Image 1 (cartoon, rainbow, N blue to C red):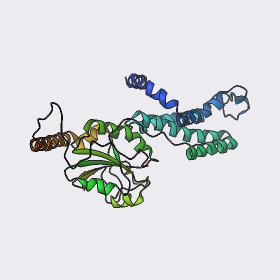
Image 2: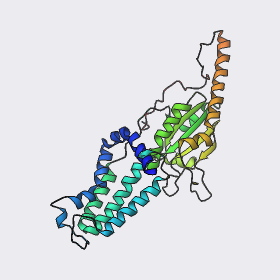
Image 3: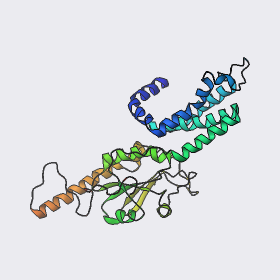
Image 4: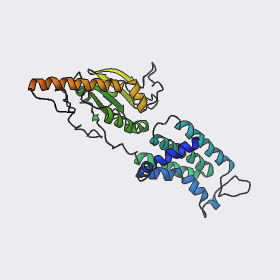
Length: 307
């Protein structure tokens, strides 16, 4: 049953996966992932490789290589139990496959191992995972604009993601946060992001560590009246994030987004009706006026790369 579920999920996301594979990052990563299998099975090359098989067949896996590959499968399945997006599933598979390939190449021939390790290092230094560029209603902050925006209007509630471009968890969470902004953004409830990998002072001020050991990336903070009300994941006394699954359902439940959204809509209607009474005009059907001090009708002027 589990295999059928996985197969149906793969077929459902196949068009999206196909688009990913067309990107240079995933093409190169896929080639590095299958490199050991290709080397071991390529006719004309595999005959000259070292093997520990009793029959001397160097074009097939020996018992130790099978053991490493089975261990790799177990690690990937355990890691993917906490994965919440298809990107995380594929990312875990590609990452641990490279680690296993490095071990297998060094075991086969130290020269192959050094070459493969050099290729992996060059890949990490030159290729970056593609950033999410889909639709969203998110304001991108810088170190000079975040305080001003959070304190501009005390009636506006802000849900802000603190992230770093180099973090794979942040990259996987990006489409989730974007989808939340599409569903819940309004004049009284706004969504924002800031890359604390670039702004160290902001990281210190809001006590969000960028250290991989702290596991605080990404962090989502709720601000009301310019002050922090809550954050997820929470941080213990040692500065480490408390284990918490960063998915859409948990964000909606923990931050009460449905309730906040309804209150924000009522706030917008009340301010809109007062303004219409003052102007002596009749409200249009289905229309909602925005609070006079908010600028939600404006599109974010900063790009996704904080230009």
